[in-house]
Image (cartoon, rainbow, N blue to C red; front, side):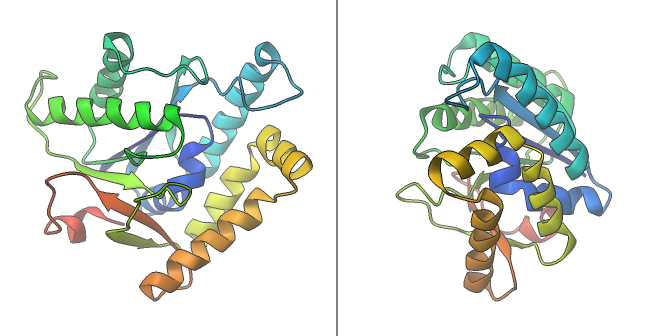
Length: 230
C-alpha cells in the first residue's frame, strides 16, 4: 500500500500519527510524509534563520527512524495559508505519493497552521478523487489525526501501537531535540512521557495496551477500514 501523512510542522506527524505510520512501514507499506512549514518559530532562544536547518535535519532523522520518505515544503512557520500557491504544492505531494490512505490534522484543531494544513489536504483529496491529477481515479481513505487539545475531536477508529510501533514513534519524536529539550526546559514537560501516556489513554479506550486515535473524514464509511488500516 501507499500511505501519505501530511503535517503542518516538522514534528506533527511523529506526535500525532507516528506510531501508525511506523506500523505501516514495519509491515512493508510505502509511506510518504510531508511537513508544510519550516518550523522556524519553534524555539524562543534559537533565531528562525538558525532554527530552520536544525529542524530540517531533525525531521530527516525522524523520517529515517519511522522508515518513511519525507518532503519539506518550506512554508514559513505560523503563516500557512489556504491559497493557490500552497494547494499546488499539496497537489504535487499527492501526485508524488499516490496514496491509498491519507492522514492529516483534525479540521477544528487548535493551531491555525494545523487547520490550514487540514483544509489544503482535504482540497487535494477531493481533487484526487475526481481524477483531476491526470491519473487513474483513486479514492484514498482520509483520516484526521488525534487532536486531544482541541474541542470536538471524537475518535472513530484506533490503531494498536503495542510493542515496536510505539517505540518507533517515541524514537522519532526524540530526534526533534530542539523541541524536546526546549519544551522540557521552558514548560517542564517531557514530550516523550506525555505521548507515551497519551497512547496508553487511547489504548484504554479501545482495549489494548496503547493506541493512536483517528476521526474519519466527511462522507466516509467504515467498510474499507479493515483492508486499509495496519
